[in-house]
Amino acid sequence: MTHPTPAQTGITPGETAEQHAHFEARIARGEKIEAGDWMPAEYRRQLIRMISQHAHSEVVGMLPEGEWITRAPSLKRKTILMAKVQDEAGHGQYLYHAAETLGATREDMLQALLSGKAKYSSIFNYPTHTWADVGMIGWLVDGAAIKNQTMLAGCSYGPYSRAMVRICSEETFHHKQGKEMIVAYAQGTPEQRAMAQDALNRWWWPAMMMLGPHDADSPNSGVLSKWGIKLKSNDEVRQEFINEHVPELLEAGLTIPDPDLHQDAQGNWRHGPIHWDEFWAVIRGEQGLNKERLGARQAAHDDGAWVRDALQAYADRQRAVAAD
Ligand code: BYC
Image 1 (cartoon, protein in one colour):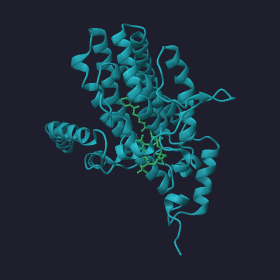
Image 2: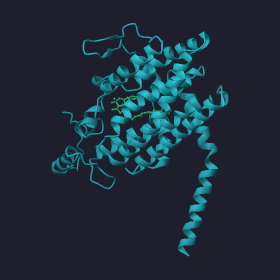
Image 3: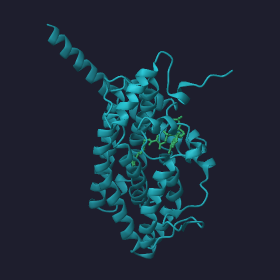
Image 4: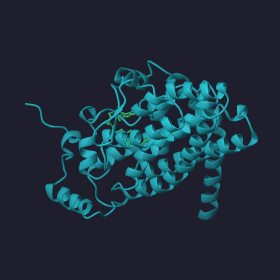
């Protein structure tokens, strides 16, 4: 006979039903769970998994846009892009700190990323071919991320929820600058219009996929919903994303690359089938730029070794001075 695993039940051997009942009552009352509070081991494991993967996504997400800083078409666009890429680094910092409050170490998290053990968002394994991709990432990728992260800002774990509030306000600026850029190109010269449409053709489906598999294929959603980490399902967030973005893209004069897209009687935009084979192949690194992205992160990690060594030496000296 096989016994259900902690990932399925949420209950780890050694934990009692009373502890779980007390914990779940706190969540039901809308209380935030803080770092020092008792929490089920599976709650902690799920949060470390999700928050560290989110942090990795922010840091790897700097790469596709960062490539365009030297090629931005104007000073205004360059300064906006530099600010955006720096913001993503900051988001990575807040999120690594949030995961550290749960006992994860920075070294272990980075090792998991660099070894390929930890995931990061599938969306950042797609290449940026033209300048319009920078705008489309802002409009669609940040747009999808905001839908997901506004939901997570209400999650039950205090440090993650508070990091999300701050990140969402910065992402809102990212989203607006992307939309402003693409709307301008969609109304610009024939070349600009073609560039904007080509970017939409390539980013639409990856943006839809980044919100995660359909609910029926989402193994983590059960416990995440039960414990107030996910307040909406993957498909609900995807629906919100489509309902907001489809009318805006159409109004900009662009064509969405989905022949099955239509509005139902309730006013929801319904999409055609998503190619999940592509999604999983991209996550496994069989398709897209996974090797290049991890190679770039490894090089940055190696180049930064002297900074970590210098900080460690300084901290050791401060400790020695304090001990004297
Ligand atoms: N990519 O059970 P499920 C940004 C994995 S960055 C890769 O539904 P869950 C930005 C999932 O991890 C925004 N893997 O998972 C930055 C799981 O595998 P494991 C990034 C994915 O956690 C720079 C398996 O599939 N946002 O905005 O319940 C520049 C089954 O899925 C993906 C976040 O990270 C994916 N797209 O739900 C510009 C938000 N989707 O771990 C912009 C935080 C699923 O069991 N994360 N998988 O081996 C979340 O909200 C949730 O983790 C997800 C997935 C909704 C993404």
